[in-house]
Length: 192
Image (cartoon, rainbow, N blue to C red; front, top):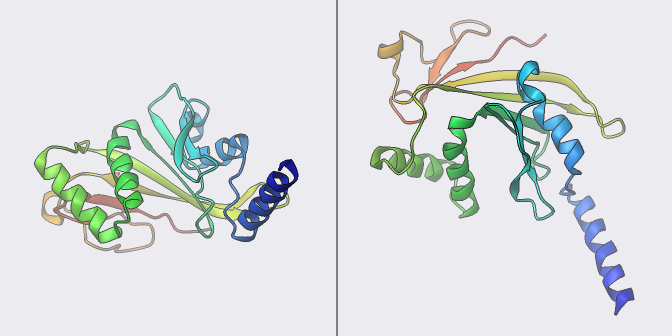
């Protein structure tokens, strides 16, 4: 019986590594998960990571207002995020709806309905940082880190902000999803 369990465990580990879904250890998730946050907020940030079942869980309790989300090992490429704690109900609702099998449009529509009904509160303004890079599998370091910024301002429009609906130059801010719960200013600095 013990031999069968060991073989099963080895097989499961092998299959997970073949599908690229092996979950990194907690320390690695924290080290890389904070990379999207401003440097002065990283040490005190909470970090959401992934447990052995691939579920998003709190892996480090923070002491400031920033929550970081570690890289999802099931997705191609390296991407981490950080956001103000007031955005967590919005983020948690999205995770819950995706777990139910809803696609991106269905998640958007449901959260729009939730905000309009009052069952989901969006902060009147808050920020999300998204960082992407190249993960060196041997060293565990992230290279070519690039961060873009999303400033949520629910129901804002081009008319209410004076912002264009698309970038007018490299790195220029513009408003996306205007007039919805998810209206936000996009700022994508030029890459070096």
